[in-house]
Every structure is written in C-alpha cells, then in structure tokens.
Image 1 (cartoon, rainbow, N blue to C red):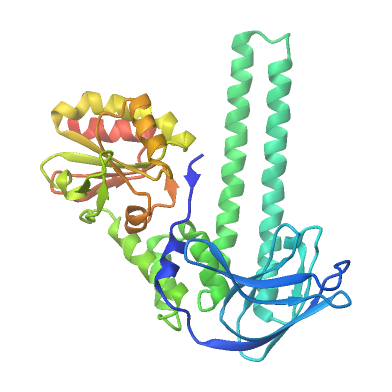
Image 2: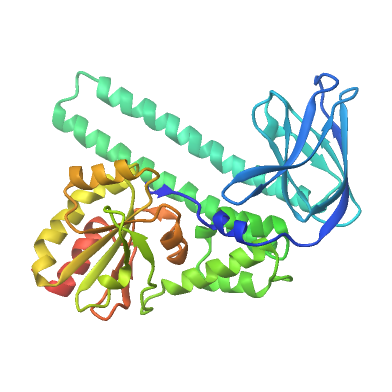
Length: 378
C-alpha cells in the first residue's frame, strides 16, 4: 500500500481569509468543571492550529459569539485529548454543540444544515472504516492461525498465506473504492461550500482531472483560501497529463547545491522522476526493482531523478547509500515539487521522453519493467 501525505494544505498559508460572518455557539460540556478553558481554533499554514477565541465552562455550559471566517473549526477542552471539528458557514448562524470528553470526535452539532450533511457523510464513511478495521483484524487472526498450524508443510503454508493475501487485498480494494466513491459524491455535491472544498483538500486523489475541472468551474468565490488551493491543484493535475512537458523545479542535491530538473529532463534521454522517502516502506521495497532497471537500461539512454520527501536529510542520504541508488537526487523538503506534480502518494513515478514530455505515470514493479522493455527492448 502506498504512503499518503497531504501537500495541498501548505498552499492555504499563502492566502488571506475571506470575509467574516457572525455566529453563536451554545455549548454543553457534561462533566466538565467550572472554569475549564475551551478554545476555538482553525488550521492555518502547515497544519498549525491557531486559537481564534476561548471561553470557560460554567454549570457544564459554554458559549462563543462573534465574527469568524467561513471555515472549518475545532473545539478543544483543557487537559482533554482530541478535538471536535465543525464548520462556521453563514451569517447569523446559531449552533448547539454538545462535547463528549470521553471521545471528542463523538460530539454533536445541530442548527446548521451543512454540519448536518457533513455528519451524515462521516457516518457513512465510518461504516466502511469499521469494515476495513474488521478486515485487518480478521487478516491478522487468519495469518496467525496458518503460521501456527504445525501440521502444514512449508509449501502448503506458503500457498495458504498467498491465497489469504490475495483474498484480503481484493476485499480491501473493494472497500477502498467504496470509500472513495462516497467521498467523491460528497465533494461534488458540496463543491460550492466550505465543507465540500475542505474535504477535497484533504482527499484530493479521489477526483480525476475532468471531475476536478468541474469542481473548480463551479466555485462561487474563486478568491477564498480553499478555492485558490483547488485551482492550484487543478493546474498541478493538468501538469501531469500525458503529453505535457515537465515542470521545472529547483531543489537542493545531497551536497546542498541548488539544481534544476531541467539539468536532466529534456536532454535527449528518457528520465524517470521518482518521488520517494526513506521512511516509506513501499518505496524501499520498490527500490531494488528500480536499481535493476537503471543498471539494465542506463547505457541505452535511461536516467532517473529521485525526489525525496524525507523530513531529515541524514535519513535520506543514508537510504540512498544503503539501497544503492546511484542516480541523481534532490530533496523536496518543503513539498514544492510534490505540489507542482500533484503527488499525494509515494512512491509515485513519472516517465518523460527525450524531449521532456510525459509518456507514463504511476509506474511500479511489472508495469515499469514492461514500459522500459517497450522503449528499449530486451
């Protein structure tokens, strides 16, 4: 399974918020002592929570009133783990929120049609998540039963484990597809409001280019932070359509020297751009295959540029040496390239032709081997 990270939220730090609306929250906090501080926050920049208001509990109740931007917000209780998320969406909005300090995400909100719709959507997703959790539990139990069965010969044990993996993977893909469809439906139905826009920014991979174009075209206000980020995403997705020229980005190499992708791409060789990281298990497992392809086809005009999403330089450099990645490398520590190339998962690979135009993406394993064989032969 690929590793997922979110880069779109970084874009929101670049833009100012829209016009504020007035709102009121009548809150209930059962079992919470008088004087306990409750904070109202929203996420800004790189997932950094920013407190925009606070109040205290009196007789297990609290209240917020004022003006805030149309956005997603979070309530937190002092010394309680977790947060309750909801949306402030319109002028003169009055909401009743009941917090659950045992499980903050289980709080409730009423008085807002958009929050009602979002809660219904989350419940629909939770049913699928429960099925996925049950699947993982069953897999662990079944795998242990097979491994612990001393009557099974090694060959039969291997056969049963492979069959189990195939069965579980097929079911997981089925459930994952269901969840993506539920998410896509919610986003497309709510693309004109902050709930749909925010959900898209958290799960941008669920929309194909054409669907994203429809979402962007229907934005009622294209100047809000979320709307600008969606339009940026559309531009990035369009950058990675077949036949599109590569997007040049300047990043530092392992020697801390700035270097542009144009140093290698569009210079008369086929170039594989590989987004990866040392902490990404699927990336590290794919590396031996990529090394083999490099050694087999490099002399025939095949090159690779590794773009690392590592958080720490030392881990990145160490992985390059350990895995024998003897090609060019740059460090995308601030997600500049990831945003430009609409990369949500790693490993993600793009293959460019001699002129620097995209001819394939999403390659790995057998699909990478087959594509290179098609280009270079045996």
